[in-house]
Length: 161
Ligand code: THU
Image (cartoon, rainbow, N blue to C red):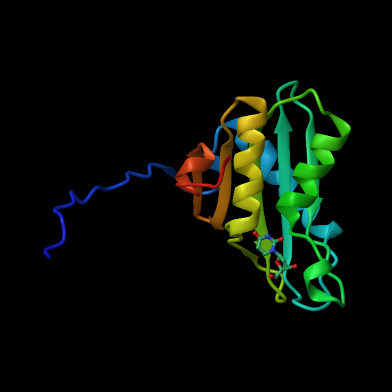
């Protein structure tokens, strides 16, 4: 028995690269700045790694979140989900339009915090719920920021029923 022929396929992920915060469009810069401010709310005594996230809603309001750790490790929550759940709770009727994320290491330097798989799945579900794709702003370094449109670029083949 020979295996059947199968055609290899490729996925294209597109994103934009910006040469630092100052080069971002004003809305994106403001959201990323809100995520940087949110870093100060992090409770991360175990990892010593802070993450800040800021969600923009369709009416322009911004809700922020930060990672919250717990001595029973899995009980903590990432910054992205802290922000997304808070926003969904406070504004159940408002679609989310954008999400900015930034990390800060134990030395106090801003570093990348690209979202974990669980946060990507949560982002995907809010896109479906709101029928609106999310603009995502990822801090990489002081001279590199990435923006993507749609969670599909971060989580292709996400779970759905
Ligand atoms: N963390 C986030 O807040 N967001 C992510 O996307 C990845 C990781 C947090 C969880 C934990 O508090 C710390 O970063 C180190 O893993």
